[in-house]
Length: 413
Image 1 (cartoon, one colour):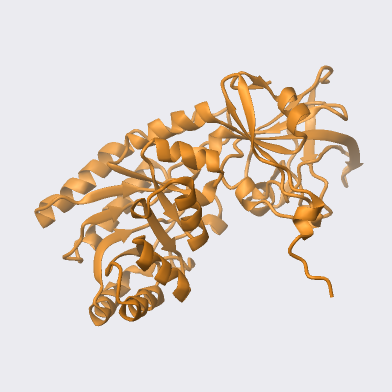
Image 2 (tube, one colour):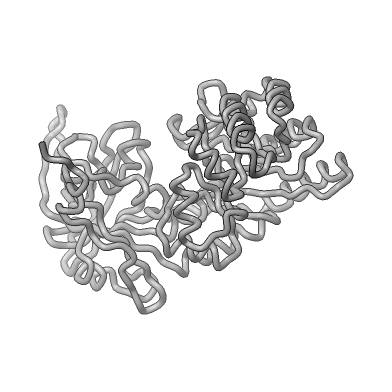
């Protein structure tokens, strides 16, 4: 198996396993696909903050959506101008974060009434920086491949409830703020009909703000993880957004900037996670049916999405003597029974795969979004390396942590 023109076995020999790998060719193709949709495109960098990925976004004219001041600083370090960064702190501000944005000229998107007030207080006390803000609106509904990723509706903490927009105006007037932007992000996985309807809602909310300059429709573009199914076509979204922009420009009689900020759709398909088959095991269920387990060195400390959301990821084995296809449960080395790569609804689900042997490689696809970004040191596991592939070449983008790296910040009594 190759990623671009590089054999995965070559990467495994050189970088060890587990290791994250990003294909620049796949990333560039997704950037070009998404750039065509809207006049202004941002990248929700929480999906993958690898510096090589950020550099590709920068070189392609993509702007940044950041959800922490650390992401803001990281984007600036990667070369982005503060003016090209929007800071969406979802539920609250730290005063120092607000001061930083005011000083640096970073545009702020407020996701709660409390954040509008906190930013207003900071602006009043700091006496410098822009008084222009965006607000994130909860339109009363959401979408998502899991309830845990649904970021709209009554059971979401995200966004200012659509019936509280008069309170936004009151707070803005109290603190001398100007609401010149509205924003929405309700989760990932909606289809075009849903996106058409929900963007229409945001347009109607936006008409309530006389100083509107920019409308940001968020992310949420669908991505199909199963390679046996067709990738979802998003080209129709361009016409939807153009129509929404025209409605607002006709309403206000001036140019309105239209933005989107996908994360997953940009990077999911460019990422792979390479590991090693370590052993085989089997049990029998209550009906006497044999359950075959393939135990690999990829755990939920490396890729948490299957355990957290029951997410599907394609899996391939690479070896010289793979056996016939059979029903296999692929599981990791972490002590929880939920550490399973093939699962759904919190239950292991066997998948039809060729039988590997210990020492063969396992490759997990669709790992570019929320893969390394959500990995951890659980079980004192070091964070694993990241590799970038371009054509026939691969290079290390992040080295593997050592135990000394993991414990460096500990203070011995």
